Structure formats: structure tokens, C-alpha cells
Length: 286
Image (tube, rainbow, N blue to C red; front, top):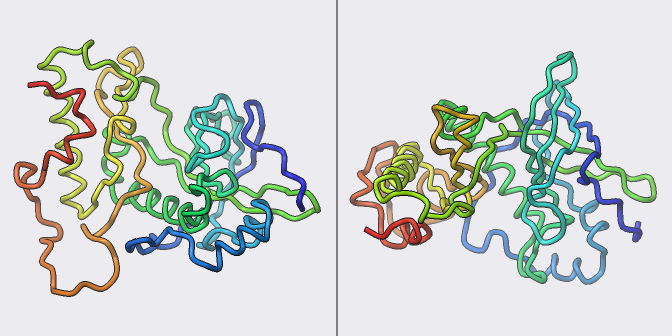
């Protein structure tokens, strides 16, 4: 078991995945993903692979269908990533001649960056998987427009040396060709165009907040500008909801009753502070 497993996410590899019904989103409290004393000791005693086998993902429920993936290209692969992200061709079992190009996000704790033991990789990937899948479900009417189409949540069984198996959860979403706002150059866009783009950002965040979702990872890296040669009617697409907080607040006890006006639209003129706009500072010069 001490022998490292072959890296499973290489270009050309084929993977069989099984649909999975996610459990409820994990509670989010202060320091909920930090390592405790028991896990820190475990980290000293066991190899990363042994820890993955000892700490499987939250159970949920098995789904009723399967699909095959062929990895086409890497987006974010290897050690020190919160998730393994790649482009794949997906063929759902029972759907002959129906293949689609998708993006796969595998929440694999073996390659998770735990900041030298500061974070608990297993709690982190459980949180990101359950929260991202739940956010896509809550924003279902925006799929195929402001957010990618969600093709489902799945489980992947990976063999490890010694005959054991380990389980990795993943989601599959629509592939969106184009550049992220982080990759694009603001100087290539007029002031008027950049103002329109920032309006789209604020409007999307406000629609999520109206549904009691706080988007903690809203930043240029997670905002796609679709290739206009591929999409004539989609100007902007939002990604990455693993850090979403539901109910507009952290979980856990509160010292005083809170009136968070759940389900009520609150103008961004009231809510948007300089700190919320700061990640987009390169796009704002007016």
C-alpha cells in the first residue's frame, strides 16, 4: 500500500464513472476544514494513499447510470490543487453515438494542497463537492446561460496497489471555450465594455444572493468570456461554486438572533463594498 498509485488523470486515460446522489451540503463553521490533533497525528503515521483509503468521502447514495470518460486535455492537474480539473469526452452508457465534450472536476484528496498539514483534505473535498453540486441545483434555471449546464455528480473507483479501491467524487459540467477574465487583458476592452461586464458580474452575484447563496470565490479566475465564434448569445459564464455558503451566513450557533432577510432582494448598492470589487480592480478604472 506504500507504493504510489499510477496518476489516473493523464491525457488519453479512460475512466468509468457511476452517478451519485450527493449528501446535504456540509456545515460551514469557522475553522471547519482545519486539521485537528487526531488528523495531524494520522498524517505523521500514514502515507497519503493510506489516509485516502482510511477516510473515504461522505456516502450519499448511488445513482442509476454510468458513463465513460476519455481525458482530452488538462486544465488543472497534479499535486497541490484543490481539485483535478480536465476536459474529457463523455459517453453515457445506454446512449449510443451520443458523446459530449465536458469539463470534469474530481475532488481527489490524494493531490489536495493541505498547506503542510494545516488543512484537513478530506473535510475540504467533502465540503467543495457537496456545496458545488448543491449550488448547481439551486441555480438550475441559469444553467446553459449564466452558468454551465450541470451533467451530474459521480463516483470514481480507483484501484490501488494491494488490491484495494479508493473512491473519488466528481462533477461533470458543460465545456465553455474561451478565456477567463484572469486570462484576458482589460486593455483590450473599451471602458463601456468593461462597465457592461462588471454589471453582469454584479447582477449575477445579486441573483445568487437573492436565493440566499453567498459566492465566496467570485473573482476573475472564475468568470469565463466565451469564445464569440462558438457562442453568439452567451457573453459571460460563471464557474466554481465549491465555496458557496447557503443561508447567507456560516453555520453554528449565534449569540443574538439574526434577521438576514432570507429570500429578499437587497440592492448591490447597499451590499457591494470595496472589498467585493477588489478582485476585479484591474477591470475598473473609471
